[in-house]
Image (tube, rainbow over the protein chains, first blue to last red):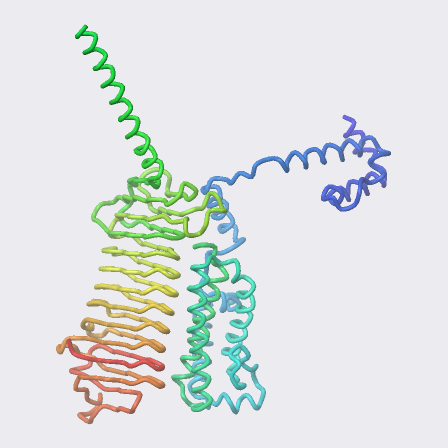
Length: 229
Length: 298
């Protein structure tokens, strides 16, 4: 009753006090002077402080597994997050904007593949023209790639940065397996780049290079999404 | 007097027996308490249900059978690790079953979060397994099967549907598959035994690849490794068109190949070999960066 009357008669300092309540309850700043002057705001503050201190003593209960899975299923159906997707699906996500992605995707693939097949493939010379970003991750002499390939390399580099920050939180067995996989792939990337520098026209080495990047992206995506399963 | 003596001796015997009984019961009780929780259940299903298992660590063994029923038996290594079973629809024969392993207490160390599953499922099931750490064995499932692992080994035998198998560090063994096969590993090896499929794709980075068996006429077989070796062992009755390439590796072949368009010798360089054996009914594409590709007769 008192609260109802108070709601109706909220003066600017009461409004200001209530708007800042969350900050006060988080312990940032001392008890505001207004709580001492206004009985209704003082009572409200005292009640909330009591609830907060009582809540701190409550045990933390985990809900039943079914609750989590139901929440997850509901969030999935409402589109808040998706099931784990493969790297390529995520990478090609922007192309889903097209109503009929399959034929357009096929066309893009054909164009890229044609460029890939018929381009000189001279990574070293292309790097001199500065048409695409240099490979940094492998610390091999500069080399450049087609736009699609360069995007893949850049994505992998970004993912690797994220992985480095997350790596420490992985369980030891998973961390070891991921580390071994990434070491193998890094070694492949280095060798492929060395081969391409010696033989820029070697399409097989180029294919292996992009495959290694693609697999590395897959492994990093898996590591970044790893939650024990 | 003797009756009293006899009564007293009987009472002593009973007391001793009780003591022995108690002595045996305590360790038995402790033993029962220490036995990991084991659950067994049957679920009535349709003939072609979708079954998924999402485990954290442990063995997952699945066999197809001719009943429309899932029989599951799982053992958890700790009471802090549990399995949630979801069935859809809730009434009548189930069309989807999800088994998910959960850690109840998140302070439980990862290595203690082990659940071993053994399942019999309808042969027509579509199956999806995620088991990061631990062995996965699947046998006689005719629907589509997908298995993902991080470090565990995977073995799939007599799969009839589309088979997609992935592992970062584990070895993959696929025996007598008859549907489309895709197998990928980074550090693990791939082993294909007697495939009856016409579409097979296997890739590994540092593992080896072994293919033992014949090729289906009209089939496409694409195998690729990076630094591991590849061993293709097939019968003299095989018929294939070979396209084997390496960047820095070698190709060793014991089959008498001819060029596809004439009786000229096959095109060969230090690192590549292209040619046809018999009538070239199947297509065999083998690539390796620095490994050796062996193609030999059984």
